[in-house]
Image 1 (tube, rainbow, N blue to C red):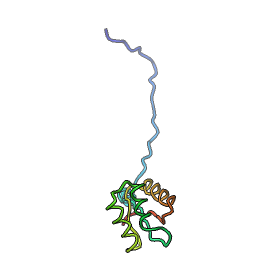
Image 2 (cartoon, one colour; image 1 turned 180 degrees about the vertical axis):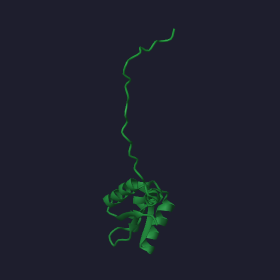
Image 3 (cartoon, rainbow, N blue to C red; image 1 turned 180 degrees about the horizontal axis):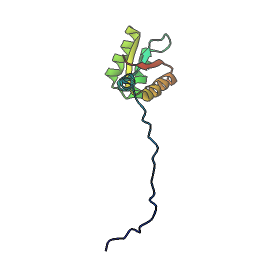
Length: 109
């Protein structure tokens, strides 16, 4: 049996406030798509074997990959050791600094 809706002399009206939509510029969209990188820089303090050990321990890289990255640090002065979202690169940078390495992060170009 259908429900009857009582008739009323006044009808209720509902007014909704306009919803503001945040506009995002094309530059901001490009910034989201651009990955960030963590760099390790050559320093006069840490042994090459220690740097490779840190890459193996922290990132779980193979011995060969760790040694290749360590050689880039040694011969080229720096190496990109990880890429990804900014928050992750901040975490990686802080962890590597905790191991005593000279590490920074930046937007990949």
